[in-house]
Image (cartoon, rainbow, N blue to C red; front, side):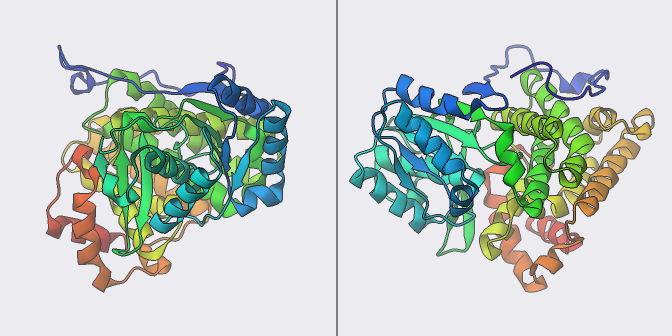
Length: 405
């Protein structure tokens, strides 16, 4: 990653003593090999070759095919003497049965390396196919942490959005179509071998997807920073992402072909991904997974609605970490009390969400009062709740969902 990419963000803030790592605590930091830069997509083909591939399965979606990126990467793979098998039978928020179909295509094509070209849905589906290729069974069997024990095929990721962080993460999110919810699969093996980040690909995102994935990156940064599993290796990345997204997202919507801003957002997505895959997340994601699973809606849009409410909820227990976030955002309230800083951060996030067109409440997305108890029950079971800085009861979770209606 080029140190010159991105604008400066004021992070000259002293972390309170509670932000330090306890003596003797073991800290791990998972990350793939990262190639970053305009025009870098060709490096994905070189990576497949280095990983011993001969028949890579290129997973993508109809939008990337229409935009011409899939054919460009397919040509680059062929130029390296490889025989790619293209599979694109995917919808947003990958479904359990779609991943099963992808696994069938992988086996029928006698593939050996998996290449994902797309956003979070494509990348999660690719990880799901890799899990089944090595472990068999149903993808829903692997919900939780380290449930897939056999080594999976090599993974090469080429993200086409700026926000999901799936290209560097140890997460795989799959829709359980029977229960109408999303499951979380976590494991070190799911961290890709190589991720190739070419900001050119961001220029063909629809405006709504640009906004949604940008808000997803912002949520990753904030939730990773306040997470119970944060550490000094993740804090810097989290704060960088928060500042970069807030400074840049609106500009990419106003000037979609301006490459400097696209590169900044690509870096923000990367840094947020590195933060959350190591620090995990919190209540906003636990809640968003349930709404997205129920209504098959864009994950980042839901995060944009929920995040301000979750910030206020968490701050009533401990507002101190939000001082550093307020400083990263350049908010004057960082000089006040922690509670004032936290409320200012929530207000700034809410304002950004409105600026990029996110609805004010979940009700506008189709969530009903009668859904809240079920949503709360599933959210409390979500793996992301284990690292949220404030615990919640069923009643509190229902109330939090109701506030976001």
